[in-house]
Every structure is written in C-alpha cells, then in structure tokens.
View 1 (cartoon, chains in turn orange, cyan):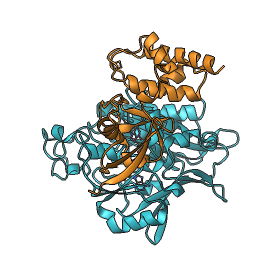
View 2 (view 1 turned 90 degrees about the vertical axis):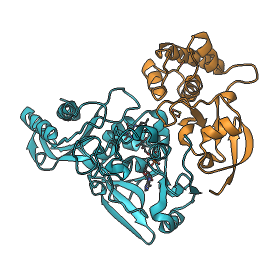
View 3 (view 1 turned 30 degrees about the vertical axis):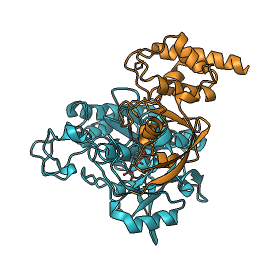
Length: 160
Length: 328
Ligand SMILES: Cc1cc2nc3c(=O)[nH]c(=O)nc-3n(C[C@H](O)[C@H](O)[C@H](O)COP(=O)(O)OP(=O)(O)OC[C@H]3O[C@@H](n4cnc5c(N)ncnc54)[C@H](O)[C@@H]3O)c2cc1C
Ligand code: FES
Ligand code: FES
C-alpha cells in the first residue's frame, strides 16, 4: 500500500501527515492528531457518534477516508470553544442537562451547531429531523431538543 | 475494525477515471459517498485492491436542465443537493420525497445518487461482521453454496433496499454508463438484474455518469411511501413509488407506473402502463393495483420484520401512495 502525503485543516490548524489510504478521518483524528473528542460508536455509519463538520456540514468520520478530505475545513468538538468560552450550543447542553454519559454529545453538538448556523428560529420538528441521524442511548432526546432550542435563542441574541 | 488495504487513486475528470477503470476494472471499486462501500469494506464483505475516489470529479456533480427539457442529474450529486434543488422539489416532488426518506440528513450529506442506485443488495445474515458470519455457513453472496435465509434456496435472496430506484423507474429515468471509448444510455430498470448475488447489469469497467429524467409532464403526480421502524436511519422494509399522468379533468389515469422496493432482489415493477393506461380512477381500480402490489412483492425473512407483514404492507403503501398522489 502506497502511503500518501496529505494536509488536513482541522479546527483552523494545518497538519501535514503521511497516511495509508485505508485510514479513516476518524482514525487520523484520534490516533495521529490525538483529538479524542470524536468518538467511534458503531463504525458503520449507523450512530453518528463520529460526526465532524466538513465545510460546516455534518458527516460520518468513520466512513470518510482521510485522503478524501484534503484541503477541506474540518471542525471537531475541540474546535468549538473559543479559549475558555464554550460555544452557545455547548453551554446550552450543559445548562439543560442534555449530557449523560456523553458518548453521543460531540456528534450531537456539532450536528446542532451546523443546523443552527443555517436555521435561526427552528421549529421543534426541524430540530428533531436535524438530529435524527444521531443516536443517544441515555437522554431520551427530550433534553437534547430543549438544549438546541435554548442554543438557538442564545445564538440569535448574540448575533442580534 | 480497520479498512482492508488498497491502492488509492483520485482522478479529477471523467477521461482519467475511465482510463483507471480500463486498467484496474475488475479489482477496483469506485468510491462516491462511501456510505455503502466503506461499510461493506469494514465488514470484509468487499476488499477491492484498488479504490478510485470520485469526489474530485466535478463533471459528475450537479443537476442540469438539457435543451430538450430533460434533466441530467450527475451521479456524484449528493442526496442533500438533490433535496436542496428547487427544480426537483417543484417539478419532481416524488423524487424529493424518496431522497428525503433515505437514512438521515448526515448520510444524505454524504450519499450520492449514483451510489444509491448502485448500492448492494442486503441480508440480515450477510451484512454482519466477519466474526458474526462465522457462526453460519458461507452463503451464496459470500461465495458459498447455501442461503441462510431461505432453507434449501438454490440462489441468493438478498434484498434490494434502495429508496431512489423505485421512484426514478416510475419517472421513466434513464442512466448513462460509460467506459473508455464508449457510452450507453439505458432505462434505469435495465440496470437491475433482479439477482441477489449480482444485482446490477454493469461491467466492472463502467462508470455511471448520471441519471436522465424526461421533461416533467403537466398533470403528472407522484408519491413515495416507505415502511420503516424508526423514522430515520432505517432502510425501507418495503416501499412503493407511483407516478400517474392524469387527464385534464383528473378523472382518468392516462399513463402510470407503480414500483416497489425491498420486495425482491431488485426494484419490482408492479404495473407499467397496463392497468394504469387510460384507466378510470375509481376505488376499485386503486384496490386492484394494491392487490397487484401484494402479489408482486416477494419478501423473504432477511430484514427485520416478517415477510407476511411486509407483503401486506406493500398493499397498504400502494393504496396510500395512490390516494396521496391523487389527493383523495
Ligand atoms: C445507517 C445507514 C442507513 C442507510 N439507509 C438507507 C436508506 O434508508 N435508503 C437507501 O436507499 N440507502 C440507505 N443507506 C445506504 C446509502 O447511504 C445510500 O444508498 C447512499 O445514497 C449510497 O451512496 P454513496 O455515494 O454513499 O455510495 P458508495 O458507498 O460510494 O457506493 C455504493 C456502490 O456504488 C458504486 N458506485 C458509486 N458511484 C458510482 C458511479 N458513479 N459509477 C459506478 N459505480 C458507482 C460503488 O463502487 C459502490 O459499489 C444507508 C446507509 C447507512 C450507513
Ligand atoms: S461511529 Fe461513525 S456513525 Fe457510528
Ligand atoms: S448521553 Fe449517553 S449516549 Fe447520549
């Protein structure tokens, strides 16, 4: 297998790496960049725990080859906070107790963030649909939906 | 589990893709969104020696109106792009519905139209990890001599569970396949062999370039209905797509097509302009089509719900799709 040199732009930082082509973005993030916030759940696209944003669009990093996403802007959960200041979606998840074991949270929060960037005043149904590809085994989803609704308010207040 | 090893190419245009296919054909897999292929590779159901990434082939992306009014959907167009197209939403709402029914939004962001049509057939006993599969005899699809679904079955019964194909067939779509030096267009239904083991009539060195939709006719109504246990993430347990072209007064069905998915090893055409040609729209006619769907559906116990239930649901979904399409 021929190794390939790639440059990944993760949370605004460029990383030069040499990877085997069969390495997924999930594996590169966790093993090479030691960004452990991105989780592996099912490994086959069915749970959403591995969600990252590529050009602000939620995708499954377990089904993305690292070699395929060169030059694109990748956001992981580590890239949301600004210094000590959490992103409004993160704040809302904490305030509304939308995190229990936390395994789904990175994927949920990133999915919600991309959704709220597009949709300022989401309806409940739209929130449900936006996170319908992310599985949570703990919360029963209600608190997550509440947190996203709260985050929407925080974000519109912030941007005026 | 890691992906198996392969050599990787990422061509930037169609000619170099076709060239790579001509060289590596049989041992190569094309990678579009990867939401079908990479899952199978992880489960060691596929281990291509060469993977050709299509994501950088810009020519394969986008939705374009042709001079004759037909619409060309590039094979690499994602389902999200299809859903965001106002042309598709307005002129082909049935296709919009079918795309919306696929998996869930993040998978629609990745999955492509071409990959959806060319996704593999599936089976509860086959789409599992290698360790899981060791508990059962090697089945036809995995290269063995038995079927784990149908006792004594002489061939593979894996189920075709794509959501787009039934609607695109009902819309009389054609597909364009190319290999180095030649290109052919065929009706979408001809892409499906109906065989579980090798479900597509496509050679290893052929690229699916795109899907051609005939110009939207006035008075055409379409509807897709899908059975699944969860409202997201689930493949269809059975699905029904209908398209009807009505007379101006809405009393006659001038022409129409009804296609099922997850009812066999390929999309199942229940009626194509036979019962639906110049037919008066009555309750009895709807019942007859629903009954025909019930008869045509041949589900086997290789997805989550029992076949008898899915067969009955083919009838229910057909009636529902017709009633909704006709706004009855
Ligand atoms: C959790 C989950 C749920 C899902 N639910 C559904 C569902 O409800 N309905 C549904 O229809 N699908 C479902 N899928 C399957 C899949 O996501 C979609 O069908 C998707 O559209 C496949 O497209 P892709 O581009 O990702 O395919 P890929 O995996 O990239 O490709 C699929 C196959 O087609 C071949 N191929 C792709 N493009 C071309 C081309 N241009 N020319 C020649 N060959 C090509 C590939 O070599 C491969 O064999 C689901 C998948 C997952 C993981
Ligand atoms: S780990 Fe990627 S979807 Fe479950
Ligand atoms: S908080 Fe435990 S899986 Fe969601």
